Length: 393
Image 1 (cartoon, rainbow, N blue to C red):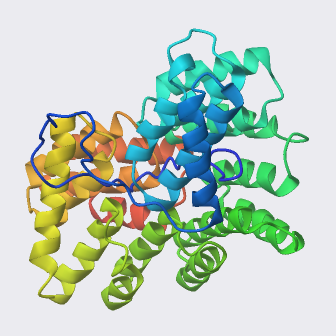
Image 2: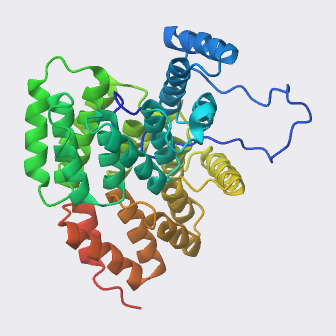
Image 3: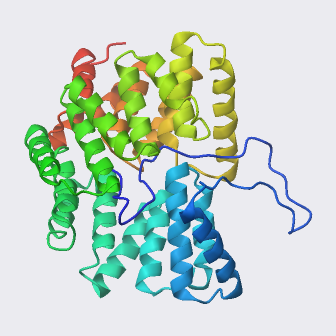
């Protein structure tokens, strides 16, 4: 479940990182430009450059720092590059380490901590904000998202309920029905949310994309392939560059044996690790000449992330190890590590796939128990569990 872009523009999806491929090197001169990160053209990017220049002259200007940080968070989301989170943090440096920073800084700090999967740190910040400002909608929605990622679904549902009257009705409903769709009310939640989206004729593109992608995921878990594909296309029509929707749609296409469509969808977008992963999976399936080079690029990126101590994208790394590197023991180890941090259906699936490949009954039972605990309706997971119950050595 990603956080709505109108409130927190960095996704929990996490699944879209970009890293340098070369071996680490320390510049000898602070003035040396190591790399210029990509910034989308347009008026917003030009405005951010002007704001950044102004902040350099007045680093203690809180309002300016918050605007710059939010701009970098937005670019990080649209490019899938986590290094913009560092730029955002730098903009907030005068207040970053304060125990009680200004509310807008503390909400942004929670957002950035959530982005690097410091969920406990994010929740601590959000709890502090909501103690001071109980009606802070951004903090409530971010908290609901973090709780959902951690599979604390009863608490997430309570947080979504508290959004009523603080945000647009569609946003509040999407929050609650996304949780409902994970707790045994899949078809009811999908129907209510779909009807609400149809009624909301003046919805902004970001909200429409967010809701449409959520509906697509619900339809896919329900086994409704055509509705899922239509939902992802709808989400991307509203926001063509949304990394979360691109990755989820690519997964859906791969699941239904449409690798050619994945190549067309992602061929110009492989700078993002999560999208390169899907591209490589499709290229391998098709026997394309660029499959091996894509796999080696991914290997280098994951190695670089590990050297930096960045363990944010464990789900993607587990998939890489299992399906592309053919390292089953390594995939199971990483999938378990990922499961200790976050527990969404996609995390359950990669853990189950690795468990089945490794013939690890204990890990298979972990997924089975989690599905039963939350009454999760997921056609693929259910089918995989049924066919493998139990693993026999």
